[in-house]
Structures are given as C-alpha cells and as structure tokens.
Length: 213
Ligand code: DX5
Ligand code: ZN
Image (cartoon, rainbow, N blue to C red; front, side, top):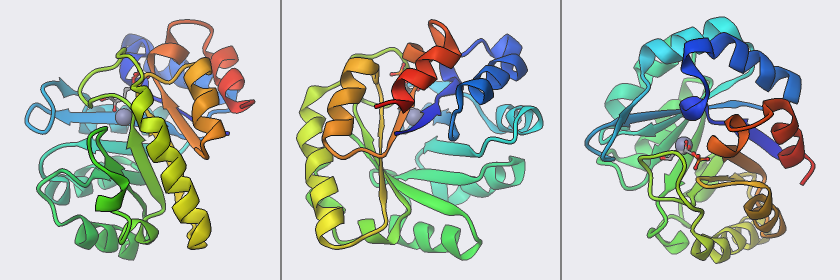
C-alpha cells in the first residue's frame, strides 16, 4: 500500500520535523489539502505552506485542490513545488480539459470525487487520469468519520480499472485508520491519504502500519 500523510493535522509549527518523521516512516507522497472557503466550508493551507513543505522534504507533494476553480489556481501550486494535482469533478472547471493541460505540462493529475458522486459519472474519463481520489468524508475537515458506503464504489472503480486495463491508481481520503484502511485495501485501493490517524500518535509507526496493508 502507498501512503500519503495529510499535513493538515500535523504540528504546522514544526512542519519541517513532521515531514522528517514522514520520511523516516517511508511516506510515498505528502498530501496537502487546499481549501478555498467556497468549494468547501473551510479555509486551509495555501501556496506558502506548499513552498515551506518543498523546502523541507524531497517527498513528492500531492496537492488536493478543494477549490471552485482548480483550472485557475493549479499553476500557483505547480510553481510552489507541487508534483501532482488532485482536482474535483464537482468543481466549476472543465475537468477533462484541466487533466489534459496538466499532463501536457508533464505533471501527474488525479480526478477527485465526493462521497455522493457515483463512479458512473466519471467512468468514461477516469482512464485519462493518473489517479482517482475517492473521498470517504465530505471534504472540508480533518478528523471526520469514514463513510463506509464508499467502499462499494472503491470496489466498482477497481474492477472497472482492471477490466479496461487502465493504469489509474485509486486513492482513498478521509477518516482512514488501520481498520478502514484494511477495508480499502481489500476493495482495491492503491494509496491511502490520512491525517489525524497518522499525526495523533507515533507518525513513523502509523505510516508503517498503513503501508503494511
Ligand atoms: C478532507 C481532506 C482530507 C483530510 C483527511 O477534506 O481532504 O485529506 O485531511 O483527514 P483525516 O484523515 O483526519 O480524515
Ligand atoms: Zn485531502
């Protein structure tokens, strides 16, 4: 299992040392939640945080854009040091076009879907993305409870991707702990994003626990 610690609930006053713990734990990427107060009812992190993270670690930064217009703002995060971008199907951008633009510039890109969005809504374009981010909470806040109802969607996505021989990796984000991570693994997830589970305890151990799934 690949693991992407989400720094929204790390000790931001000590971002550099939190990222070193992620390195020691073997984190595969660092998940950075960007919230604009419009697409989600919260404002969090931003360009300066991404720049600071980039200065502190060489682990690739994945930028989860919970913003209404990812097509306008993704380039700010590219210039700040983001390696890949997770953009929401439910945003106001033309997501197929944004995916193509991002890839053309040489960056990896993922399509993110909220808990209430069905897989069938994006099945015809999912193969054009490097990642499918299945949200297992309503985006906006760290520390929410995992919504078990998304598990069949992870399974459906995984079966579709295998059947059609696509290369898209499935990532699950929100409320992921060891127990829910096991369910995700059994349903075909490739990557787990997790914030409060990892940063509320021994960071290295928690990353390793999730990686072992
Ligand atoms: C939710 C964010 C998640 C969040 C996960 O809006 O997209 O990435 O940080 O936090 P936990 O793991 O605490 O649910
Ligand atoms: Zn996220």
